[in-house]
Image 1 (tube, each protein chain N blue to C red):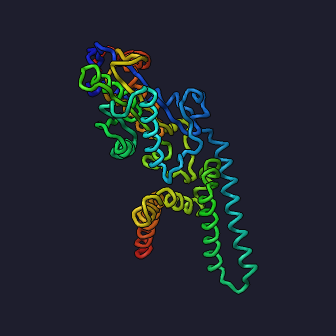
Image 2: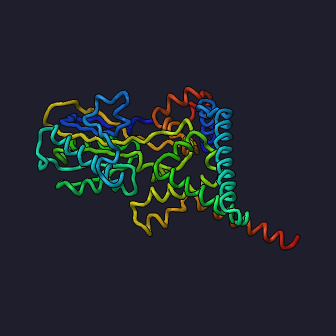
Image 3: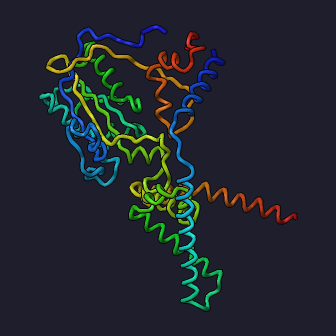
Amino acid sequence: MKANQTVKFKNKPIIIGSYSIVGPKEGKGSFGPYFNYVVNDDSFGEDSYEKAEKKMLISSIVGAIEDAKIKPNDVNLLLAGDLLNQIISSSYAARNFNFAYLGVFGACSTMAESMAIGASLVDGGQFETVVCATGSHFSTAERQFRFPLELGNQRPPTSQWTVTGAGACVLSLKGRGPRISMATFGKVIDFGVKDVNDMGAVMAPAIDIIGLCGMILPRISNTKI
Amino acid sequence: MQLDEKKRNEAYNRYVKSRIPKTKPWPSLFNSFWVGGLICCLGQGINDLILLWFPNMAEQNAWAYTLIVLIFIASFLTGIGVYDKIGKFAGGGSIVPITGFSNSITSSALEFKHEGVIYGICVKMFNIAGPVIVTGIVASIVVGIIYLFV
């Protein structure tokens, strides 16, 4: 395996601002105090959960721009994604802003993906200031991929909870903050797990394919995968 | 290469299977048994009450009214957000009786009401119950054909 998936950034783009919003359940978790804003009501005052997801995305983008202490007009590009069909929450959120928009989809990795793309564009000098954002909502994801909320079914122990929340960050070459020095773009790794209620087992091989093969498949770890 | 991949996937799936937490069958069976039984007793009670209050009613009509009452109760409990909690606790016990059927239709209707009356509620209402109805009708056709010739 060649390490050509990893890119190094010469100028090391800076994360000059960030903002996060989460739902009530996430706010009660162990990371609760670290989020910028915890929503009390997971509909966020909207009449549908999709609209709530969109509103969370808009709020997090506005919050990140404010946190970076720049004007909205300084932003050149928005990279955003979510879990819904045609990444509609991001697209509708982007309607509210006057900058270019590029939709990204990476399911759980959308945030990292948008930051990797954003850092590449900023590092290359194509764009000065890029906002990366991602949002998801438990209730919209359940509706899209699983069962209605009020259905009286049992969830198996391996089933996951889709986060209700949104996050955004601003990348630029000027300013203060943590720097992005490298990024690794991932491959699609499919180990043939067919259980839709066990996303952990599906995603685990993508994280460390060499280590995992070494651990459970010592005999065929030498072969090229 | 392809064989290796197949072997790798099989080994990984075996590994996953050995590690995933499993539901304990006995407690969940017990819960579904007593909740399901309770729903059946409730149905029988409603049936007896209807026959008590309307002594002239034919027994078959009383069955139909019992079902209507049970469907209403389950639908109502779904609407106020209680039935999914019962279902989480009881599993099959609250899915198998007619109340589970009612819950599956009401929950779908509730879920999709934002998409409008026709395209939301009417189209998506039978999202979960639909396959059950189709299977039931197909099975009854097959049984009917067999009955015709036997």
